[in-house]
Length: 255
Ligand code: PGA
Image (cartoon, rainbow, N blue to C red; front, side, top):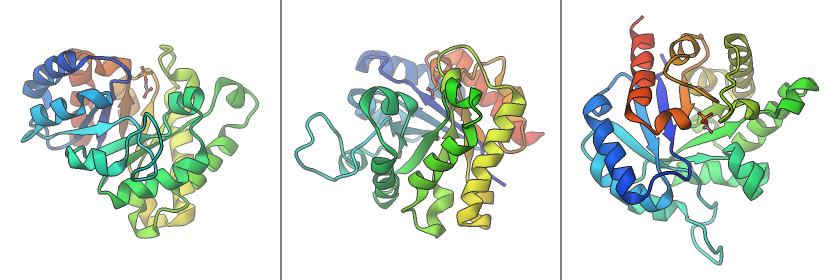
């Protein structure tokens, strides 16, 4: 049994004050949920405040990126020990926006994913194809490349600790969601790629769907056999939709 996992990626939204307001409003609704792993990922500057607010609750706080090195001349970046020091519990890695606007590469993710694990952070490795790649029939080729590179240096026995998020780029922030069939097929394919490394680990690895997950489509997506949760952007910026998505995951476990 894979424990469902719902993560809210706040992206570059919310000042520290706004982040505190959002977490304070969220905690009474979802702070005691145990059947589902609930995560929020605020911007770097808000991390400490949200960690402090969420302490003692079941909500975990993740960063949205980190550098693969622990320290050095990397202006503007943040490292795993820095995140660990403030009790951040995980990190989103390889989000398509990092890949698209900040030149994140599979080569650096190959270092970042195992580095996060070594530092005690749960990595969420994001993968997904562009609209053009899907139309060309290149979805599987793209996913194979991203998953193999991202997991290559993860020791086999730790593969199940990595959370993978399949996010078709054409569905992010667009209001277009993958059909249940597209989501299931792609995520089953990602699981098969993990199984190429180790079948038993693949059965334990949580694989999420991301891309315009909303209160009204979450239940259908979360009911799919290989979909173990969701990475939610816009739908995580307000309490009601995000709590509804988490409730849908709780229902999915119980049914
Ligand atoms: P979205 O973003 O839910 O706003 O489409 C998802 C993501 O980027 O993780």
